[in-house]
Image 1 (cartoon, rainbow, N blue to C red):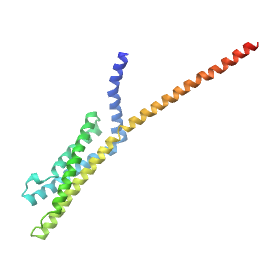
Image 2 (spheres, one colour):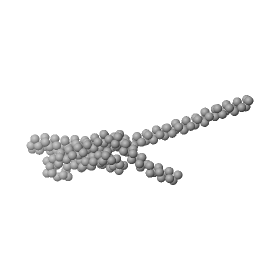
Image 3 (cartoon, rainbow, N blue to C red):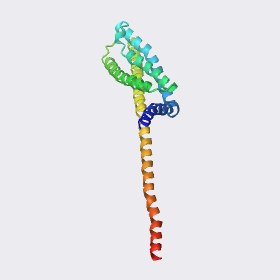
Image 4 (cartoon, rainbow, N blue to C red):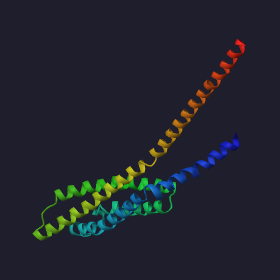
Length: 204
């Protein structure tokens, strides 16, 4: 019994890893690639817009460039997503979930703050400068919102990984129940001929 329990404990990590590899390399390989490329592209694209807005508003103080934080997290998340697709490991799933959660929260906060700043922005003396600043602000907000949406979809995709295992377990349990019911019906069929043979013997 102890040897069987030890073998089961040793088989569980390998079984989880096999399911994760099948999920990452076959079932969701295309989705993970699209997510990783989107996160890397959005993270790289938001950097020049955030720096330009910070330089125009506050003389290049990077503390005011709020979209840079979600951009860095998006870059790390995209790298982890690519690594998960290349070599699936359980710790990469946890890292991907953690980075996406932080990116979702920080990105949403940065998006709300940038929208409020754009709404309360004072008009500069030069009208062309106002138009250019408004385009940069809206571009930074759009890329930040894109990163938030991609992180939300990543978390949704990760949450859909375990229900498949539960469904397979429920199907396996249903098959066991059907097998037991069939085994219960077999003795009834066997007792029928035996009762008939006994009745024939008594008549003789």
